[in-house]
Amino acid sequence: MRTSIAKLIIAAIFLVFALTACKEPDSNANKAANAGESSTANVKTGVKPQPDSQVAVFETADYGRMVIELYPNIAPQMVERFKKLITEHFYDGTAIHRIDSNLGIIQGGDPQTKGSNMAVWGTGNSPYPNVPAEFSDIPYKRGTLGAARTNDVNTANCQWFVTLKKQPAFDKKYTVFGRVIDGINNADVIMHAPTVQGTERPSDKVVIKSVTLQPRTSFP
Image (cartoon, rainbow, N blue to C red; front, side, top):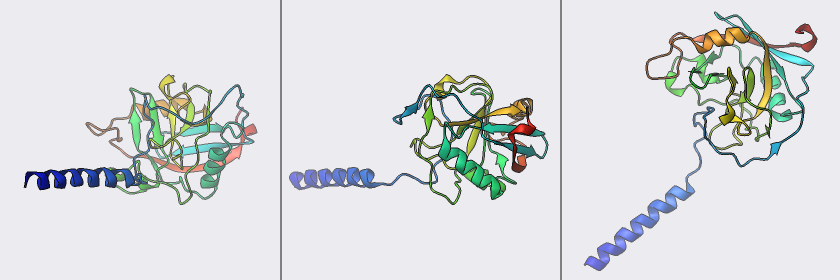
């Protein structure tokens, strides 16, 4: 009898391990930049960012404007995706869903934020496939635009974040694809907006009214 029970226990343990090994990653996992995560992707080094001919102009409902230049020579696929979504008005009406004053970060770009269910904010994607990692040695500092992802380095899609202070823990681990060139003080105000107690969610919705592409030459 004891031998039979032992065999059943061993079989059950084997089944648990087998099911765990076959489980696919959660495609709706929260996408966020987090310090301390490791990276296994290749890193582009020694390349100076060359601004795109167009900038992304963010107009918020209550916090003014933010202008971002883009670096297609550093992260061509992520810049292409970002510009495509902008031309489709994908970001219009979305909200900043994450504020972390300790890390010095604001994050947005999730279509789920057009709704009021905060439980799903940070889990959304665009209709398009994920973008593979395009890591570089460009450091994360004040004003850097990065691509949010899950623990899988190849899951950047539509969400973005801006660092408002040096964050070396992100260096070579998250795709850099732009930089704030105007309105950085507005981003600071957003970062210091009140949050729901115990969360990184803004107490009052920080709405992005529109994002448009405009000539880089219009912003010296």
